Image (cartoon, rainbow, N blue to C red; front, side):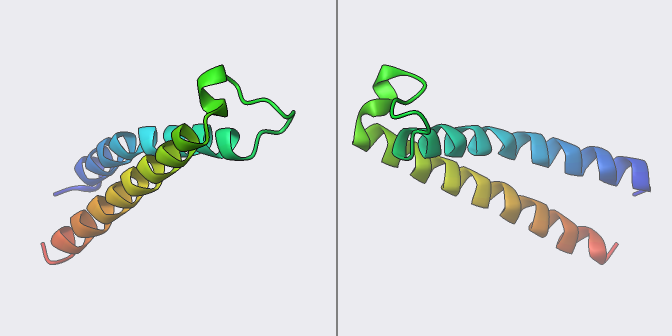
Amino acid sequence: MNNKEIDKELLRLMLKAMPGLFFFGLGMNAVFPNTGKALHPVLDIPLVGNVLLAIGILWSLWGLASVIVYKIKNKHE
């Protein structure tokens, strides 16, 4: 594999993990609103904020793990 193919695959993996950061950010805004109110009224429900945080963290960890596994697999090639 050349460097362009590796960079393309890493970009694809990172783009798959990006929604996790979005959910994490929404969860942070729901749990710790800056102005006293969250961005959307649904985010004022504590359970919604906690679930968004959990989903965001798990999704981001999955994305990180997939990048690490990909790097380990291609280290031997």
